[in-house]
Image (cartoon, rainbow, N blue to C red; front, side, top):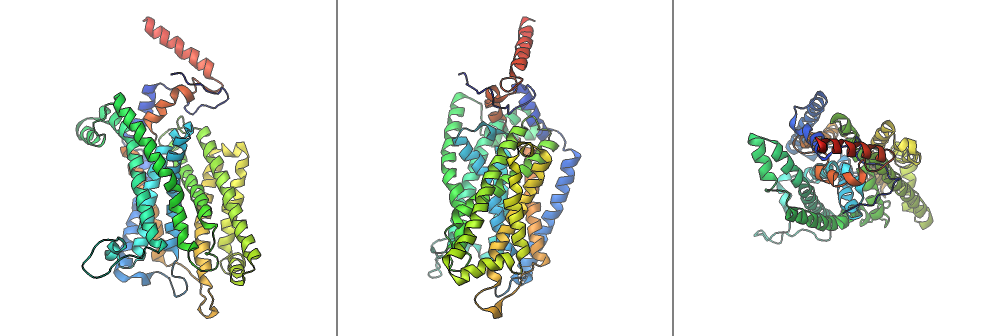
Length: 474
């Protein structure tokens, strides 16, 4: 079936690739010995993973008293990091599900790594509520199950319980979606492998042969999972925001939190995808599959969501003033001019001001600018979560209980350790599966390859046709 393509649309696959070249370029990093950059990154991330295991063991052994939580600030770095990681986990399913439903071709270069990032980020996020319980071995108390020890039922009115259900559902659907997309590519790797690798890939590819019936089921399942994932993308961070919005604490008790948290999550998630993809395309030499056009499209989403977040910040300030409610006004006055003013300045500078540079097409397509901005955005989104939690709790109704929160080395170690866990898992993933979806890139080659579309299309196409004719003649 012919595909009508706009002549002005830029190609998403460069280098005049054939189907065989696509397979070779994307699959070969999983088959060759890792290069020096990968080994160095894996060593560093493993050290941080070791730090994570040590600090978690220290916390369990000595108790939550090793953290600097106090009578005023009962949530510190732990819940800040929990919300931050959940936010990062949002972009993967958004890129996969919503852009698949809208048939956006540019998703094919980045969706696989973004989906993997989602799963690993949610795994990191899940660590914090568990550790925060203090008694890890009682984690099963959060599940409603029949028991013989009396009415041990969870509080279904608590948004903390809604978190458990929302995040576990989101994680399950994300894993299914990610794995479904992997099956054709695992079969490709199986056919290129020998020995034990071949047997393992054969098990995980479920006997995929590429038959028409397999592709039909693949497409159907992908659409069903995309349809399930789309409301989940919106609901998960909405429910995380209810942890704050359903309370009666000034500065938290606000109806803007659900949409503002969702926009912030997509904002930080896309920034983390950019960070990962820019490193991956350089280390694995995938510049012809993760092109400047992909980076440009991602930066447009960052610009839009960053602007939404900026509007939400200003709306919060306006509503606090307009409400005439003294305690609400003081909560925001304290955020801006109180002892944590530096975190508010960092949040506004990184989240509202810095993304505005992406109005320039030249900057949107600059690797250096994009990488720097992606780091800034994630720092800013961490500050946002810290501002919401720490500054609101530090000064309550009783001035006698006001305090200032500074994390201990254990809290800092756990946070750095989750970064180690995240990057260790991602680096292992790049060694066992293609980072770019081979089957999906092939599916858009005729519509988005530079020999078929873009300024050099005609020249490339005539050249390839001539080569093919000569080959046929011989």
